Length: 327
Image 1: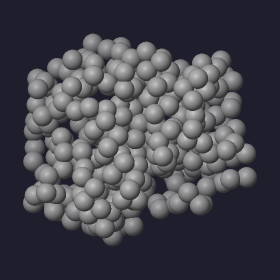
Image 2: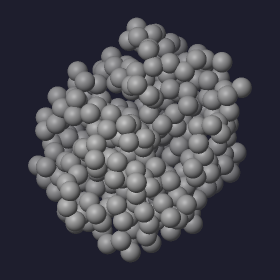
Image 3: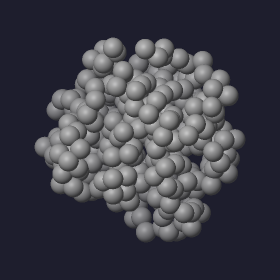
């Protein structure tokens, strides 16, 4: 059995990533079967609970107030709307419900109290509950944990070396600090990145190395393909190929065997054949529902047909790492 490691060297990650693609995918498949339940995919739903008006300048994001996109800013959703959306998600087969607010950081105000109420409400439904709200203090992380938060998403986005080309309103260290606060609160970390931001292969290798050498591996690692949105600085970026996605997913699977590797943004542009390649390379989670925050997502009925065709089944909620296969 491959040992779980957090001491990967950059050269080791580079050697894994640069293997011939079929060999890399085969190795990832072997690791996947040792550490995960085969044929099981976690289905998540992501809801934007506060949309647009963000002061950050993330070059890929249509929710930045600095860019002229078609996003209409909207305040925090009422609790009843969030409850209804979570119930609909559960009825359609999702077992994790993720809530995203376009904030730079969490503030200790009435809006945060309302988010804590949302977390309690969704947790009481038996769903795993995730949030992505921007930067957190240790105290805020502890309060989210007490409210029943399962996981917190805070993506690295890209390598530290390329980061300043994409975002200038916060630092890489800021992101790592929030991840540390989340881990210390014993909330599962969901952290990955986006490919297609004009980065090099070396940037992708560096980002994966950073994730795989955290004190504890993230519980989930989203692999996003950029969806170029008109009005953002990256609106003319070309779509990344499925082979680039497979290479990222397979490398992440080998480096972080127990993580849920999430086939995230960009899936809407993939036919079932391309998605199947990603599952074969070690992806075992998707986002379902009409939207990923503000961009289009795959049709739920089409996803159900894909699951039936590929022999996939939804992962139950709150299935802990102790339940994964470790033969």
